[in-house]
Image (cartoon, rainbow, N blue to C red; front, side, top):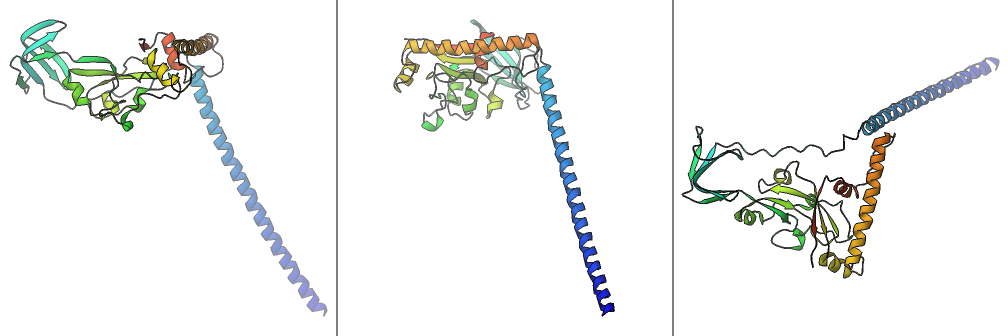
Length: 309
């Protein structure tokens, strides 16, 4: 009996020893896992914090002469073509008529105009037999691409008539480069157009300029074209918002909309000027809904405005 009891005791001791070892192994594994999770979390926070510091330092490094600007736009590249010569043209230049003149161009760029032009080897020559040639016309007020032709509900995107003052809108965001009116516009001699928002709103948004070329917005867009905003007075805003029993339904209401928005923009501009002078350790004051108006106050943008009766 004594021998059997001793054997049973040894077996129990072995069992408890194995249970203890398994428990210690699990605790070690849990501890190692916890350390790994903490390590990964700390490294991630350090990366995020360093990126945040980097971005803040970029903002704080801005000086008064280093205004934030748009990212560069890749220039439109014409397909490479052989030189082209149009000869025997009746050429009109700023009111001056040249008879039997010539125009030499290559890859979309005019190289020479007039008489006695040196013709490069491989030039394709077209005889116009006296046909009239003018510079391309510039249409300063166009809704091409934002109020498409033919006129259907799906093709009309030039007015966001839900708020009378939306200077932060951009006509480029509603632009359709496949508008069927392009060929009609070109047939009238227009080669460049400024695409404006409509006049339903007192402040309709930002315009942009296009060449009647290519088949995408970026290929048509004029690089570094002037910033221009569209605004309107008179009947259109009165009609649109008056029919909704909403301000403005009179010219007085339109005047108030102008004053309150430009007052807010002037406050923002003052905050920006103060930031530049004091170099405060904070982000540059900005408001996406007012920045376009600040551009007007700083004479960095052109204003196109309807004022009619």
